[in-house]
Length: 253
Image (cartoon, rainbow, N blue to C red):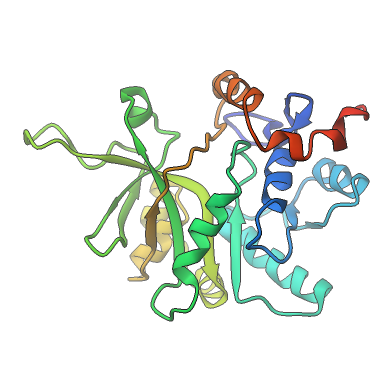
């Protein structure tokens, strides 16, 4: 709720529903997930989801990274549910147009393999303003689809050669094997992680592979108030909204 670029962002209403509630409800539509919990350090968010009888846990307010919050939430959830989980999907609360099928895309590289431990989605950027926007985290990958680097700068550079390059944005949807989430917490915060404010660079600086999958599905992130108009226009045409809007229509939010 104290986000510097957009204070109170998680609870901003989009078609009468708080943004974080859109993310939660759309996550419930995924057939891949056993449990969906909201992890927050804000009482207003905690109380809102409690009032909806939704699963929510309070975490420390001192976390610098979403992955750190997910690590703490995992331990709380395993204690509540009295079970352990093999794969954890971290779904950011500021991508309200999340397509539930993206969850299957991000989980798939971790199933039935010991090779991949962390999985991210990425989408192509075509508009110049999106490529230059520092709120969009860009990623470059190896031929084996592992991330080489994440940056808020436009990478790779397109100014030195005539060869056309493709730009990709990292989505706020990350899947971890349990070991990977535990390892993230054990690694010290890294220089490039702090410089770029990107969790995944902590893995890369520790020679830890992060597998990338290009998604053809769309999802828009709300970083600043100016992003809202485009998201609201998309939401009006969204096919998933009908699955949960009735939960909120009759109530004053």
